[in-house]
Image 1 (cartoon, helix red, strand yellow):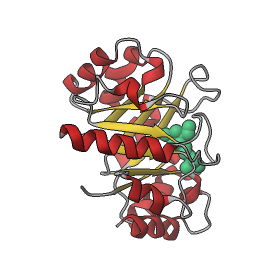
Image 2 (spheres, rainbow, N blue to C red):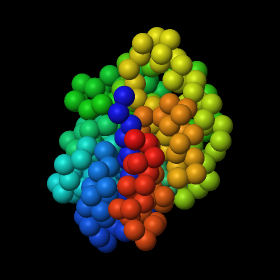
Image 3 (cartoon, rainbow, N blue to C red):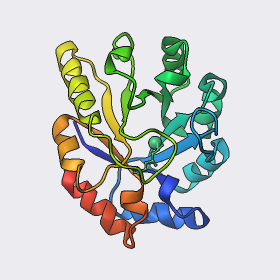
Length: 218
Ligand code: DX5
Ligand code: ZN
C-alpha cells in the first residue's frame, strides 16, 4: 500500500493559503488535510465548507476532511459538495455510525472514522468492514503543535493486525504530533496516511520539511 503524506493546513498561513499549498505540492505530498472544528466537540473553531471549496478550486490534490464537530450528519452533503474526497467523522460524535458511514459513501466520498486517544480500537470492530479509513488521533483534537501520545502506536498495530486477519481494506491514518522523531516508528507500526501540521507549516522551508517527511515514509 502506498504511504501518503497529508499536510494539515491548520498550521498554514491563511493569508497566503494558496502559496502554502503550492509549497507542499512541490514536495509531492498526497492529500491536503482540512481540520473542521466547531468549538463544541473540540475547544477551538476553524473553518467550514466555504474555505474547503476555495481550497478545492486551487489544487488538484484530494482533500482529506477531518470533522471535529457535533452532529456531523447535518453537514455531510455540504462537505462532499465543497470537495471532500475523504470525509472523516469522530466515533465519539456520532450515534448511528453505520448510517453515517453509509451516507458518506452514497454521497460519493471515501468514508473515515476517527477515535480520540481515550477511545479504544474495539469500539470500531463492527464498522471496520465498511470504512475506507480509520484515523487514530495521537493528540486530543483541537489544536496543532501538541505532543504525540505514545499509546497511539499500540492502537495502530492492533488495527493493522485486525485488518490482516479479516482481509479488510481500510487505510490507517495518524494525526497529531507527527514529526521526524516518530514518523519511522509510525510507519513500522502500520500507518498508511500521515497527517502533519506544525512539522511542515511551522518550518522556515515548508517544501523541504514536507520532502523530508515524504522521504522518510517512502
Ligand atoms: C488536531 C488536528 C490535527 C492538527 C495536527 O486536532 O486534527 O490535524 O492539525 O497538527 P500537528 O501536526 O501540529 O500536531
Ligand atoms: Zn486533523
